Length: 183
Image 1 (cartoon, rainbow, N blue to C red):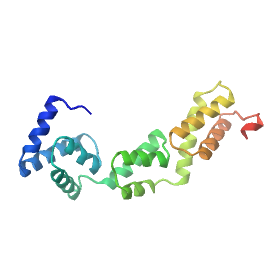
Image 2: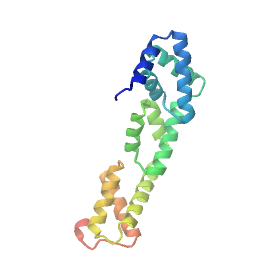
Image 3: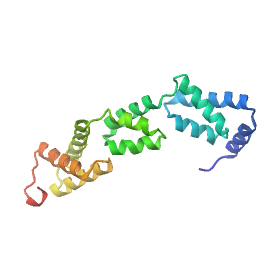
Image 4: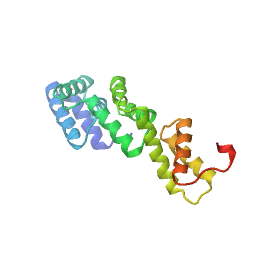
């Protein structure tokens, strides 16, 4: 990612600060970030490093924020799983990918994903498929089925779950397949 001239100067300045001053400024920057929205400790450390703070300063700031219970990766992961599962209908597999992108630990990811069971995932897949079934009214059955299965696959659902949910949704909106090849 390209850095502006002002960004380059800030990085140079931050690298030359004394440890005490760097810690204070890095902590203030981290707190400003957390005032805007929640972040994982890994993302905060990455953002501090991008600002030119030395690695030990970044680690020190993150550990202090964790000790003060301002940063909590487990809570953040659970909130993110609930939010993404409910709003976007993502599967556990897709949620795992999103959590890894947020630089969360494997332990936090596993704990967060445990709150979803097979029924939750199936209900979410059905809700996504039902919405797509209603949006594709008037199209041929095969086209609708293909579009629903594709959308569910993009959301991380396996083939069997996607196909079963799509067929369920089509039957819910009153369209059953007459062709034996889709059964």
